[in-house]
Length: 203
Picture (cartoon, rainbow, N blue to C red):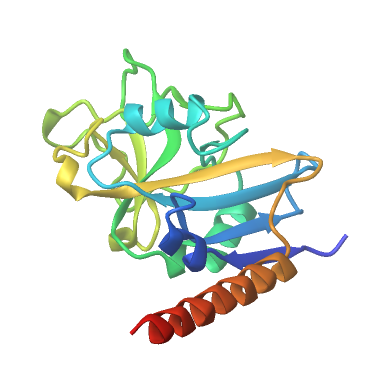
């Protein structure tokens, strides 16, 4: 089956305050589990890894979302080609975490979905528990060309965090069709036109 990519820009919805997901939804049908996987980015500055995880687990973004997991080179390439490179900001959380008593920085990493940890995309000299810090949470950054970086739960300073990448999967994923966006755009344009006419009439 050929790879399907569906990219739907959400800048209109973001501007209306209807969603925290900005930039785009991207849907991929080539995952090894045979399901559709949908990805997005949430811009939520100064958010710790645990806060981001709890936010999604509580369903605040919608049904089924979790911190994004990247379990193959193909998935990394897909996300980087279709989502990451269009993202504004620098440092974002992913859905990886390390067990507390790991003997070395590279051992005992897990995904929030319990998928197998058998693919990594660490940046050069990562993971490193830099300067002896407890860096047990996974991040990615454009400063490392979207390679991975182990981080403290707040990246040593919450001001460094731009947000987090999210993912959900299923036999189908509910992404608004482009026609829905067009209809909403037409409706909003008409609403704006009527408002302008009303303003001129009352002037």
